[in-house]
Length: 165
Image 1 (cartoon, one colour):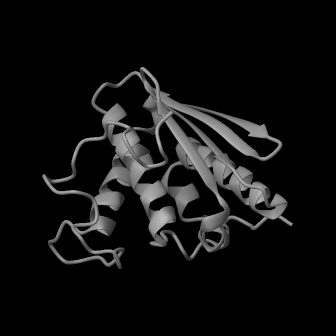
Image 2 (cartoon, rainbow, N blue to C red):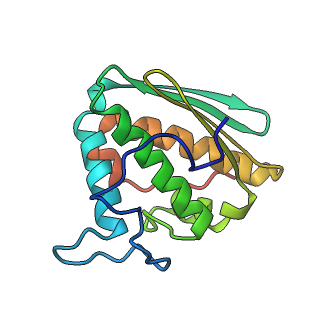
C-alpha cells in the first residue's frame, strides 16, 4: 500500500508539483495556478462528472474504508490526484472548506488521522483510521459528506455538515 498522499500515480499539475513551493498554500491568486486553484479545478471536474464515479463506504470500528472508482480513464487520474492533494492538505495543515463545521473539525484533528491509499484498476481504495473515538466519528461523517457531494453535486458542497456528537 502506498504511503498516504504518495505514489498514487496522479499527473503533475500544470507541469509543477502541487503547492508550487508555497507551504502556507491555500491562497487564491488571480490568474495563477496556486494550490487552491488547482484543487478547486479538480473538485469542479469531479463534481461535473459525478455520474461517472462510483463510491462505496464501509465503516470500520476505527474509521472507514472507501472505494471510489470510475470507468472514465481520463477522470481516474484527476480522482487520484485530488485524493493526494487533500491528504497533502491534511498532512501539511492547509485546510480547505473551512466554513463547513465538519471540515473545520476534521482539519483540527488532522494529526490524529492515519491514511492508507492504494490504487485500483479504476480508482482507489482508502482506509482512514484514528485511535481517538471522536476522530473516528469525524472520519465517518466526512466519508458520508463526500458521498453526498457525489450524489447531490454543488448544492451539497454549499451546505454545512454537522460535527457528530
